[in-house]
Length: 441
Length: 159
Image (tube, rainbow over all chains, first blue to last red; front, side):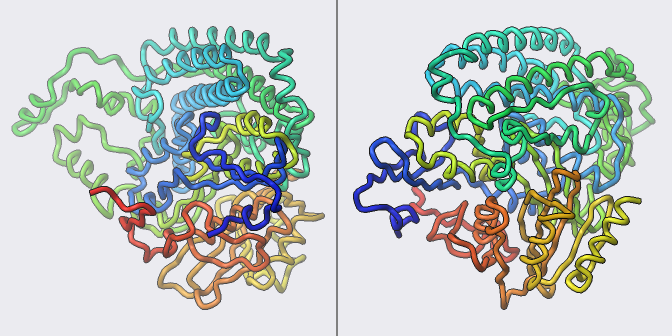
């Protein structure tokens, strides 16, 4: 079967495949090019190599169980994906989230945003030949991920933000690691500015290349840093503040020309703003109300004792159940029994706790939002990340659709590279920050 | 208060074309007949409503209901920071709806995805092909009758 470009191509032009597996393409995307020498006459983008049927899978998982799948959408900033899903469900169920959990969410999702932008710039700069920048950004990203790893226990697939709150409280080492991460990221940002802003090689490959006008960007449905690089003021955090973003003082950086260099610069400035938000949140975060529990009874002993008498003292839970202690719940999770797993101590020691535990995970039970539909969006690394969930009143979504910001941005690639050189495709593609997991779901 | 007048404005402007206009938990929803889709979308995109961004296009398969499919469009107005959801019901006998590619450019890929996943035909679409799956793929994976575990490898699986 002939592709569109094969049918349309002029007889004297050269057809060339770029990708799906190409050293300069991060992610498997195929770009078919019609070339006249080095110039791109026409192109066709083919996607779908990483399509995993996310939406179909979600229709067959319970609301609680589908959370880990959202990690694998934009796998560089999984916490924002978690947040989008959790907040959509909270809107559907009408749940209020404790203040401390809101702060934890903001801190972690801004750290994710920084790591997302750093990854994008690392790949973009490296593909333009700036290998040093790649090493620096990856170094800073490691520091950001250290903070995330301490608290969530994972670097990428976190599943940390839960419906009604977060999984666990902040790790004791969080404050120190956050300080290091902020300092190191600031240093790295300064270094990158020094290495790239007036770098002739970088400027020649990015300045005035793949220019997007405001009208075109809106017509293509661009959001996020890519839209703001054209000078359009739209950030979900400002337009419709969710969580606690209306309480922080931050700016939304805008570009002027909408070219590759502006997309780079907007991302750089946005990271500085994210750092500002993190600093404010770290100052304002209310202290944990949970008492520090030391010692305590072994779970096996508690289960044994509970057969003959009511167990009252604290129970020492295994470290991988951190955050499921009853004492920490009020600070980090909503107490709404419709959406939150019953505390582990109750499950271990009382009949009622065990029943409610099973009732939560059992088929046709657990989280069951009312009939209806909800759309909610958060500002992801690439733009507006929206979830559209249709509920039929059962324990699994009738339909779950993700608005992926990448898809809209990549749809404009054919338009942006028309008439440019082959070498311009690389920084253009790099500046878009295409994450295939999110693009193809 | 303002939202209320917004719904009234919509009803006033599109009176006969709108089947129903609702507001549920802060979201405005318009339910319309499919023959008015393109004209209504054009009117919404321009003054005075200025819904200049097509955020999303998707479809829901209500198997067992009549009409079975429902197209869902999410619009966003940048100057007014307002969202609007538009829903159109389609029956499987006539699974065709007008394409919005003439109004918004990202409609091209979004409609290709819906065609790929649900088999909805878009009249006036310049290049209606599958987007995420491949051309030889049979069936429409997001329809409710498509089995979850069905595999259609393009290259035979290794034993």
